[in-house]
Length: 502
Image 1 (tube, rainbow, N blue to C red):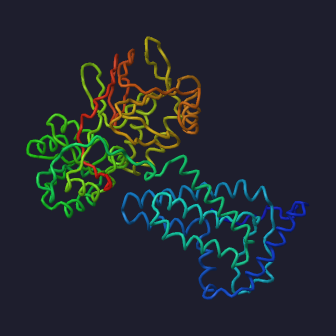
Image 2: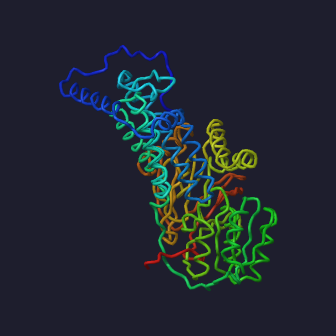
Image 3: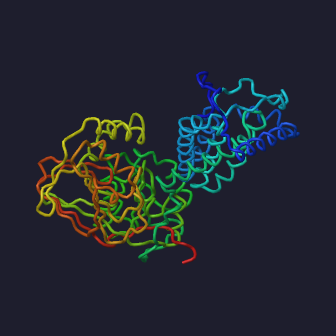
């Protein structure tokens, strides 16, 4: 991911522009390099060359990311993922554009003491430094998600960047330019996939709920199929008098119904599908719901502001809660609830493909493979009647609340009680891969003529073919004929920690 050995690079090409100012800058850069070579760096001789080699191809940063993610906190995992994504963007930019655009030769090693030099000298062009770009991208990416982890990683990133001048393989300006490029890559990734901390959920409207200092009265149903053991153990320690029922996925429905019969507060630990089932039970019994994220995506819990068992325990102990909207769709007389999204078109096929592989390779890789498979197959567009007009669509998306910054990744909701359905469509002409890729890169879907967006409180679709797949909260069902989608404003009461200043 950094400077690699490429013997086909032509270093005999012109390396400087014949502009006096440019030449003076190059001369000043060379003088600064020579000063750094003569400067005594106490204790660096045995550290910086090894550190520089360890950062080859991003190996050092992959190890750091694994260590950060191993702390098992949601923010740490997101920080590690964001750091690696930023590094990948920076590395690709350096190696495909940067080094091919400015073909600058490496510094001469004469002023560099032999003990500092790397055993194998890179032969690519010098500007910009790929190591510095990767180090800055990783550190800034981590910091944008978790300032505390960013502060911990920053000294290591600085040392890697400094090692490139210390070992004589880069001029100082190469390192500065690489670091600037890396920081820019991290900011670009944040623009495409906003940091969770940048979108703070609203704390309204508040609801009156029982405060349970030790958890007595809370009955928590945990779906063991979601890998919830760590979260459940943490909640047991935080709320020792709560009752926790662990069950297999196929037993979750019965366990929720039984728990509701004896609970003051119904709790659930699992993914979005499990939370959906618990919300339906809580609504039927008029109970407040306590949600502990335990699945792969956990959109509802995270948009609510509950990251882990510490957040939930704090809210339950203090009796902090809000009322949120729910979505409902009706097809052939059957009602279904959704808390996040409802989709028709290619997305239900993606969910089915993802679920068929997720138990073998994990949720995120399965989702990627599912997307590639669905787009490659190039299915016929879905035909839906909207407002009396029949339209071909590749995808129809209805969100329970307005989603912000729909781009390369699902957006976030900052208001779960806005009374609106966020309806977006991708039109059905052309190939689905091109249309959906345009949807991803255009940012908000309203910017592209291939898409349309509207915010309503009720939606009626007719003319659906029998057996049309529909996805909601990670589950898939089939519908036909007419589907009515509507909001249930402030229908559900959910525990969540409230800001201490309010």
